[in-house]
Length: 104
Image 1 (cartoon, rainbow, N blue to C red):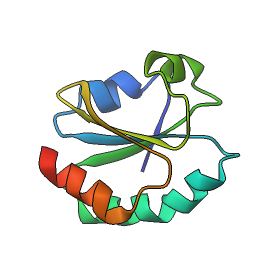
Image 2: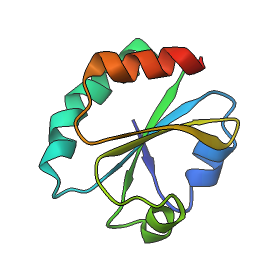
Image 3: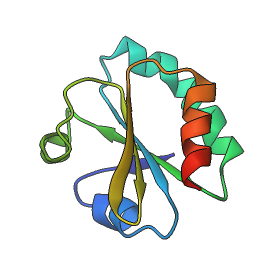
């Protein structure tokens, strides 16, 4: 899982040659903790096809503002430098899996 920051986001996500699933989270978010294992499982499943990264919105306020993150967790799928999908809150693994499959 990539630790995404304001300094590495462009290189790791926008310039990525493969799709990137980005989780916007907060350390104080119980729903984020629930989703951690789900995202870890999906990262293992799609390891060669999709990159996974996390943005701590408490530390990356500009990214939070740029992508209009109003609730956590927020999951955004980026492809060719653009956000092409978004999910919010606790989402079951099959739903996220299906969304990823649609884009790869």
